[in-house]
Length: 157
Image (tube, rainbow, N blue to C red; front, top):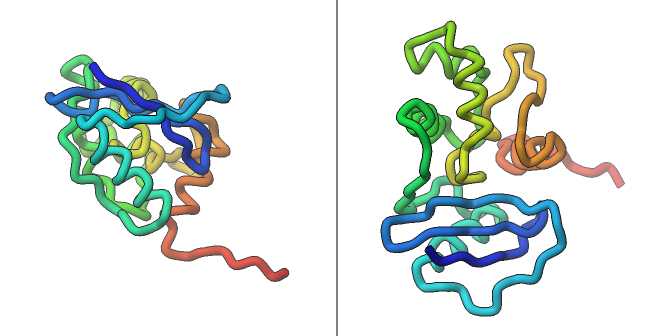
């Protein structure tokens, strides 16, 4: 496995993967040093994440290889179907997966998503519209949703 660390608007981001695909993209809660040389297996991921943060990319075109249970994989696949700039509730996600009673298991799998931003778990919100349950912190979830919003808030000053 190869890894690198890049700087993003939300902090340092660790990327892990190999020829089988990207297996992990996580936000770090520490001050790290950016990787000087990006491994060739991770170059596309770095480029696409930078484009996302610049606002020029709305979909990722990467070979991914997240590690998880069969149920987690099913949830993560469904997360990939949430369009850029849109949100759904945990309840709606459970319904899409065919089991409304699995809402807690779905939320748990969502929280274990190892591919930050690429598999858009940040697009899942509470049924009442609240920002709930985000491993990267609610302030980052809010930033990501605002970044993807078609309705940009303009400053009055």
